[in-house]
Image (tube, rainbow, N blue to C red; front, side, top):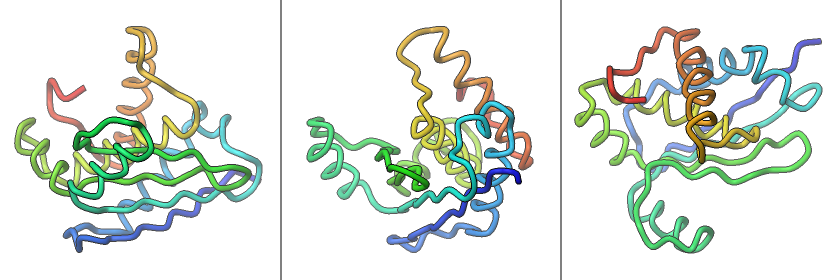
Length: 152
C-alpha cells in the first residue's frame, strides 16, 4: 500500500484559500519518490495552521529563540504524525507581491518547504539548497504550481 498523508488545515485568520487544493498539493508532494521514501508506513498526519505575523513571531521567539516574524515554522511530530506547520498569511501575501506570483503559489511553496523540513531536509549548505529546491519545484509542478523566476 502506498503511503498516504492526511492533512488538517486550521485557518485561524480566515485566509481566502482553497483548502482542498492545499491538501491535494501535499498529497501529490508525498507521492514523489524522494518524499515517499521518508514517510512512515501507512497513514501519516500533518497539521497546518494559517495564522498571522504576531503568532508566528511569538512561536519563533518561544521555540527558536528568534524574536522576529517569519513566514513558516515547522514543528517535528513523532510516529505517524509528521508534525505541524505554522504559516503567516500576511507573510504569504507580502512575499507573493514581492516575487510577482499569486498568494496561492506562495502558500503552496511554503507548505512544501515546511513538509520537507519535517521529513529531514535542510538548506544550510549550497548542495542542500539545490536538493531542496529541486524537490520543491517538482512537488509544486505535480499540482500545477510554478514559482516565479528568482523565488527559489
